[in-house]
Image 1 (tube, rainbow, N blue to C red):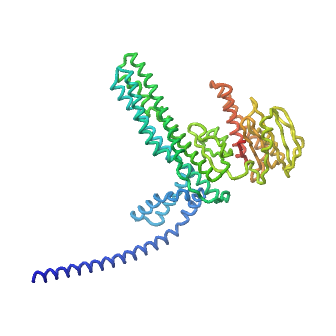
Image 2 (image 1 turned 135 degrees about the horizontal axis):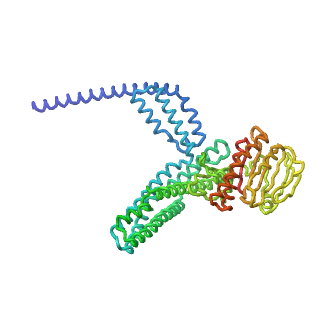
Image 3 (image 1 turned 45 degrees about the horizontal axis):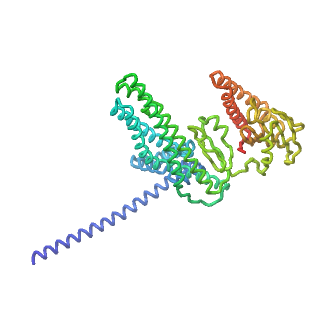
Length: 514
């Protein structure tokens, strides 16, 4: 009986402790909530003081479409700065100034790499270098194991290559879908930008992964990688044969083939980089075009790299407009960074729809220059026929419109001549077009926001650029390049120079593939 009473008393005391501890816990929780609520209010007050650090960057990122398609952009980095700042006891002004700097950095990254392909290329290149090194290491092991038996060496290398391609396929099944998804995201960035400009008003649609397209991309990449290993295998077997004919030992043979099996030797590195850049951009552009086609977008515009690494070929193509079904495959050449954007304007870049497509066949099939001239109201006032190299336009109208062709010729560039542009300037033409028979492009120049430039100033700018083009042409020929190759380079450089001269002088310039 005494024991039972003692146990009961102990239980009551235990329950009292539990109750008191629970009450203390509830009180502590209440105080904690109050404390953090007050801290939150204070924090929000402080944040509002430094809102100017984010407003402009948020606006710029929003206009680029990046915040919509990548809503988490910068959020992890910003949170880390905020938390580390609080832990370190930094003032709100110091912490949020660091966040403002982070947003500036993020904005620059978006501007420098708008398709967000750079990280994909780096990751894929790393995988390709690993494939190259693994294949090289495997070949060295096989040569050591089968030294003196070239036939068996070749058989074992073939077996090893087949086995390696199975693991490569697994790697590709993880990497390649990312290229496609990046293309879908890039398309959505462009559509969101168009919505803000009210060029595109259709609702968002869901694009499921296209398994057939991704499988095709995987097979394409597998073919390139197998080609890479085939090239290594062929070189190794050739060196192996020569080395054995010279009675070289195993260490000498391994040293002989090291330049083919080590990615770090330079050849493997450059090959991996070329495949990575080309195939990431190919997959990205295929995904982009698929997204646009699902939205019934009919025209796309060529967008070249936004920096001074843009080559003359892509510079000449930059801004060109194509029917989406006739858009050429991008990338256009190895290491090309070009991509597609949607085009919602009129193909002739004229606000009221002035169109000369009915003249294209005549221009493209003519071996002489033909000019059509319109007055300021776009009434046709004359058709003039010239020679293979020029056409005269008597009494050209002020504020009128001129369109003529450049037939294919061995010694004439394809786009505008300085005579064309100065003619447009002096007559205050509203628009001036040249149709290139050689390239199938309709070039257009028109007045900029500040009107036409001074003709003498433009001529000086043009002549200066022409000197550089001619010097390069002569250098190409002297360096052993054939005349045909040198001329092809001249043509691309010339057209790019004309485009740059126009833009530098405030002249609106567009190119449309016909």
